[in-house]
Length: 351
Ligand code: RRO
Image 1: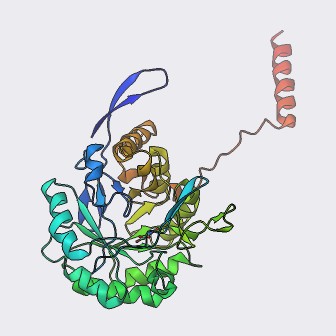
Image 2: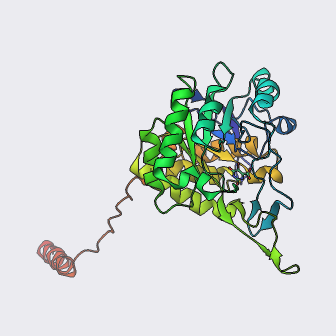
Image 3: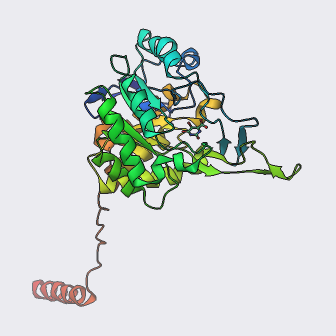
């Protein structure tokens, strides 16, 4: 992609940065995707972005049946972020497949379909329904924090996560990449990540929201009707970055989506340096719906400014060892004195 860099001194420089990235067997032209739950199925964002120019749209997690979601209020602002307790509102997979997925296909937008079941069997049915459909990838949401039963947060338990991924792998179209979306609300995210990879996942999406809450000091009751909700936005960026870092360090060949509070190209660059092959952006869309293309442009500029001509050069680069800086040592005083004596003796001889 050709970009124009406006430097501080207003010089304009044209650079070429190859923004393509690999996610399993797919090569995608741009590493910036919209995150599940923040862009519905992409239609509304099309007014603000050329959705064919970004990596793609990850659709709102879809269930087998239509669901109204949790009671309101179900969103709350927090410092540097927000809480949601939507509770998997959606039309159900059949309406999604007849109405929303065709829109993405007609508009040539790369579609990553997020699925969320209430049991292993439901995940399997959802994955099976994607056979022959124009989806590029499946994101298996095993980490929604807003379920009635915490036992349904499959990503908090290694064997539950593994069972879901095995079932999805068996039912999904054979060549379709499968990304498992994990929760940060675990003691050891690397062990959950490796259980998913051992069960047939192609890659991982890191991370979903983390469970939080707000108490309204006027009513003196929890602000959200659902009491707790998923915290997102810049408040969780360091947490998300740490998860990407740890998983990449343990499994450097696994493709990762970095997700969590990305608002700028430099934020995206941090995730790529930590080991993400691509990023998803979510909460920023609520106040800047044009963010996907802006962040992609800023990322390409940031790469060029650092002397890189491709995204792939930057993936995991933060893990390289620090450069060893050897301080220049002053001449030992003895040597200098000897040199001076020698030079003055030579000068005396010449006289
Ligand atoms: O719908 C939601 O309440 C929701 C989902 Br599915 C999710 O994965 N993460 C989140 O914060 N909210």
